Length: 214
Image 1: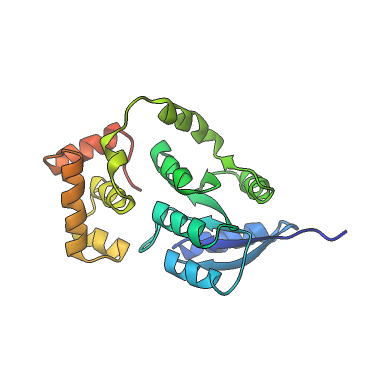
Image 2: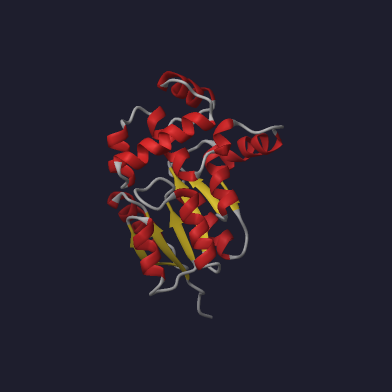
């Protein structure tokens, strides 16, 4: 009896990560790498030509990324499952991905066996959350009232985390493929939404809520 192959498309802006994932998945008899992309735009272009069962997706890439990319994928390719594989272990980041429509969330330091297990479970119609994040997610969902950063748009949230990590407006513009003017506008809006007066206030808030970007 032939094995049903799970066709997986890898999307990550780091070539070494894509290479490592391809090597790992090549060892699984029931998983096939359908392709790879370094950003959201390239992923969408590829999916318009070739189909796959699942996308392995990094949350933090230049251009279209994060929850915005997940929402776009869910709208344009509803049959394609999405497993986020991210360096971020914060519950807030995972929550945004799951609310946008991701079927699973794993951190990049997960054991290879966990990744394969997650792929197979999601391909079978289930969901999978990194065990290390489950308690945090439950706590976040059970908390009464929202936090100011939850009111930010996906792009504002990205800019906020990078500012908190010490990036300049110019560096953020380069990383996200945006103009300096656009990043400055996002900064102005997020500072106003969160009622922050100074950059120090922003950093303190990010540390208090464990939102520092890598």
